[in-house]
Amino acid sequence: MSMIDEVRSQMMEAMKKREKDRKDALSMLLSALKNKAIDKRADLTEAEEYEVVKKEMKQTKETMELAPENREDIREACRIRLAVYQEFAPEEMSEEAIREQVKEVLEALGITQPSGKDKGKVMKELMPRVKGKADGSVVNRIVGEML
Image 1 (cartoon, helix red, strand yellow):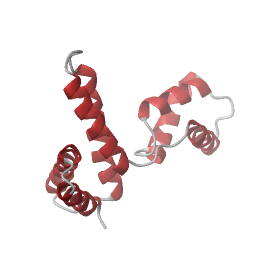
Image 2 (cartoon, rainbow, N blue to C red):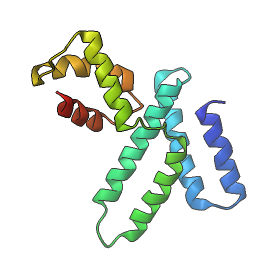
Image 3 (cartoon, rainbow, N blue to C red):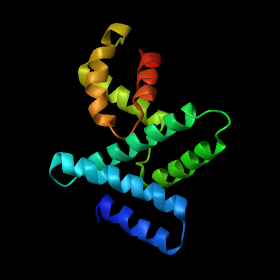
């Protein structure tokens, strides 16, 4: 079952249970997924679905951070939305798993004495392997530490 179908069925369930906040969050996610599919003019792949979920999570976090201090209602709505989105988000790679991927890339490229100059080559090879599975800023930090 595609993520769109899963979100739609959970939204219907939330409507039946009269969980307004959950229904609203699922509705926003469903809308984002449908819009992406319309833009693509085809069904979304699993990676593209996860990409949409991550984008929605990022936007919600930014909204929460930019909300004024006295607007606890906005912050609470964002927390609820993030909790719902987390159910559909892909599982993040651990830092140890990212380090293993970096080691594999270094071996594949034949780099025995890695230096800062090699970072571009390593990142170019590494990012397609971890795309959608790890946060880019975490990957960048780990590669920087290892080089």
